[in-house]
Image 1 (cartoon, rainbow, N blue to C red):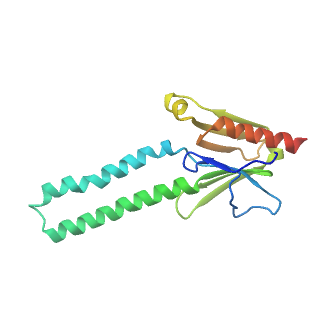
Image 2 (image 1 turned 135 degrees about the vertical axis):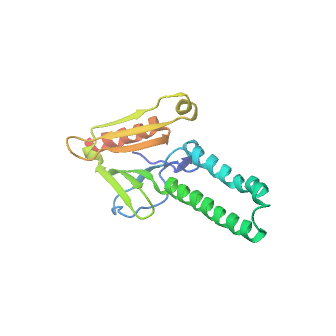
Image 3 (image 1 turned 120 degrees about the vertical axis):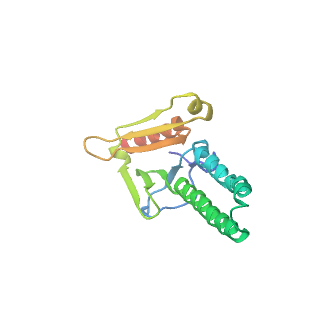
Amino acid sequence: MGPHNSYQKFFHSYIVYPNTTFESQMEDEKLVLLVRQHPVTQLPWIITAIVLFIVPLFANIFVSELLSVRQILFANFFWYCLVFTYIFMNGLYWLFNVGLVTNKRALDVDYTNILFRDVSGTSIEDITDATAKTGGFLRALFRYGDVFVQTPGTLQNIEFLRIPLPDDAVAIINELMEEANA
């Protein structure tokens, strides 16, 4: 791939030529594409967090006659600690579950929880096909979908799920494949 400028779209969920490095990056390896789930796919947990944030405001009205002020404050404090933990954990999962494409390989980094990480990767030379799949009204409206990177035989297949601009990501992977096989 020729010289390109770095740019990002969709709240840093699609970054071409990001100015960053990653843990297992080789010396001559350049990061070409960093993707994470489209921000609109995060709306379910964000809406849930907003509802959970509002619940005590209404619950306090009903329990004010049953509990003392101190008990209500303690219950609210405990509740909001749980809500902020929920927000923090979901934000971390969105931030750190990424797909990386370099000039040498494709990597899928998934955190199953805060302590466990699963990294799947394959070299660009081993990629046989890259496919973008979008379907449905919301995916078409917000331009997000899935990218499947196939490898031969028993080698690891890579999936980038619910990412923005899947067709553009496949075009970048195909261009890297052509350069690697040239």
